[in-house]
Length: 222
Image 1 (cartoon, rainbow, N blue to C red):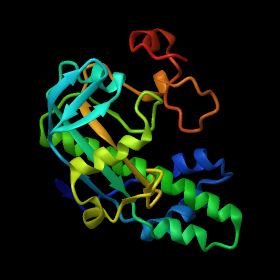
Image 2: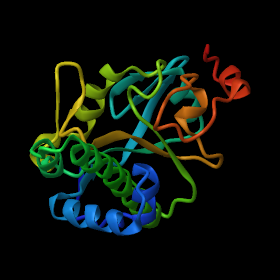
Image 3: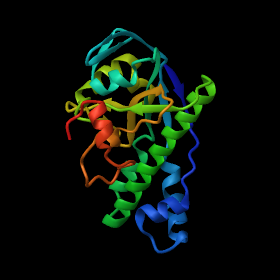
């Protein structure tokens, strides 16, 4: 398992202003300055290899993941990169201690932007360090096809994530601290987004529209 510490994140004031629907860029700057000292971005990843492929599952380093979509995405892939990234608990704790509910919301949303920014830095590191071109990712729980309980298998591949990152799993397989992301990166000539296979309309995190033709290709029911 490889550890990346002290990941530097650029939180764009314009992105904060847009996400929080603020009236001024100065307010965005002030919120970023409040949040930044509480962000401790780190990541772990591992170079893993596909051992076996089944009709609706794939085995990585001896661990079997059941997902038709993941299996299809790794059809011609042998090397993948399981990962967990986090910004730590400090910003979340700071937000929770705010008396003003609006301030809590603002800091929570900045935390979401920060952890996504940390994952983008991991993305850049993997592409540069391993000479990769385009890469895509999938996360347990992002689709019904790959349930969140497979999160435990992902952690088992990585090893002692708690000691390295301070990230643990709840009995329902959610990550603590909450501002953490996990998944598997893989080379992909055509960018893949799980949102393309998810029919849920009211999703604030949606990155792409539901694609009926792609869902048929993956044999995913809307």
